[in-house]
Image (cartoon, rainbow, N blue to C red):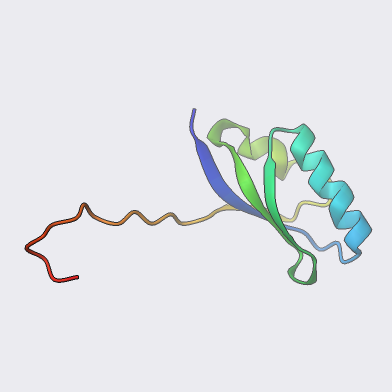
Length: 80
């Protein structure tokens, strides 16, 4: 399976509670990258097959895949 970038939304507002949730997510295979306490978001990556495990955790309101962008190959004929 491949790793996908996701954002985890929570209604927890206390920074300590969100840190505990991030640790719990990590025990379930999530690799946290950023913790945006004011927004109730934790971003990171996880194997695609483990998304449902995150969704089932207490404190998790939503798990959403983040869009990815890949630039097309360089073509010297195309203006940059």
